[in-house]
Image (cartoon, rainbow, N blue to C red; front, side, top):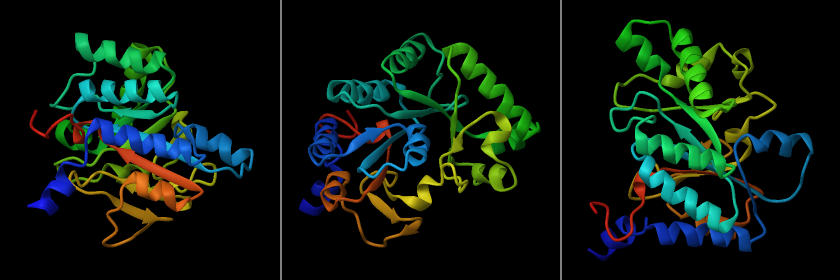
Length: 243
């Protein structure tokens, strides 16, 4: 029972805030995904934490994270789905939140499901991509520069689209897992993710470290030079998961 509590009740908003505070206190510069390109160009040597947020289910909780980051004066990249049954990004409230995120200086990226779209709708995946980017750019008055491929429930892999294509072909600077020399973040970093909901997992330069469920804060203390953090708003809560 105690083990269950320590795993499942770890993911509070207050706790994740403290872990980013720990990163700041350990001399990490917290940056957006797009900023990593400039970090590489400058051949910078200081420690960086790339702050990525995949909004799979809840834009409302994404606002909570954005407010935490604003309080700490750190930026993030929020990847947004356009066709999720869980949320409409352009509903009255969600559009307000997205504008708040943009106006706070955070990056908005596209959480792509273009293989899913192409199979379900019997449309060309490239057409789906171009249309979605145009919609996001027009609605939010931004220029999306990055994509992260979403892993949903269809059994299809949206990353497959990028096997023979490059982000630059679509006026983009990166795909979150691409191996292009200008980005290649996943292969060059220590990557930590909360995507298993009740525990963390991590990869060292693209290789899974089995059985290592240390938190973001614990990896910060280890002092990795390039720390790539992926969190999901819906994982976090104030008191319990079902609130």
